[in-house]
Image 1: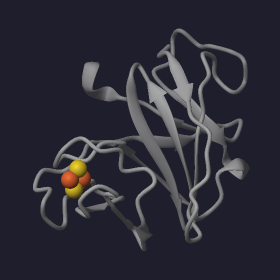
Image 2: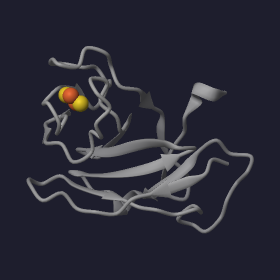
Image 3: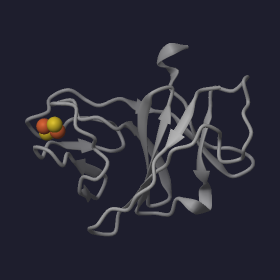
Image 4: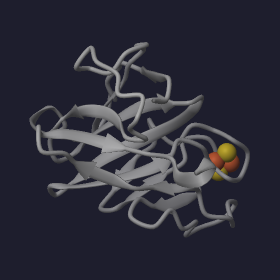
Length: 140
Ligand code: FES
């Protein structure tokens, strides 16, 4: 039911490839007003080592595929608000591109200064049709 907007783009370095897309409908072209889950991509469109950023109700969420498992973080650094997407990914961590704070992709935990607070994590699922989906339960 959330407004959806994603962004397109590619990272210039390493194996991690990300996309940001802008859209006002789900990739399926359908909307389900009874569902809190928002489509991110088909499972085979987000391969290990890739991420995608999606706007769910004006919250940018970055969804990672780490070795076949999907994880979602708010795309914001808790130090000074930079986008985390575009930062270096080291194993299951992402490094903020602005000042270098490191966050655990699996837990959102801030691992190194200058960030001390975790960034938000979100539930991710793959539905029966093979869509990776996220939801933001904070407003339930
Ligand atoms: S904005 Fe991310 S470390 Fe400063």
